[in-house]
Length: 183
Image (tube, rainbow, N blue to C red):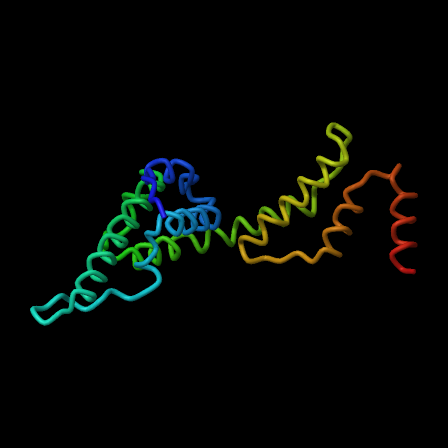
């Protein structure tokens, strides 16, 4: 198999910058890119024991690969975090611990984002400025965002939210849908 050089920088530039409101999306993209780059070993196994005079070549090799994975993972994450956030995070030499610190910092931000997205979903109304297709896609996208934040919206509820978002002239459509659904 031929190994092609991959630019870590190009992968990092494809990750949205962590800005305080997008932790779940950022984390998913970071983990994916570290996996693609084969730099996620530091997350898969604990730090190997220190190298000693009696360490085997296999142990030395594992330690070297793990250290590289850990170091580059931290650098990758730091490159994808907004400066005002980066400076407030505690320094650590462990990629796992660094991610844990970030997760703790943004757990509450995700909870408030869930509330906002749910409010948007519940109050969204079709006003005719866009197509019906775009309206339904917008609502479906909100549900997808909620799912990435750990909030599952059942398909039946999504359909009901969509029906409720329609103006009065769509009343016959709603009645027809409810009639065929109940058969």
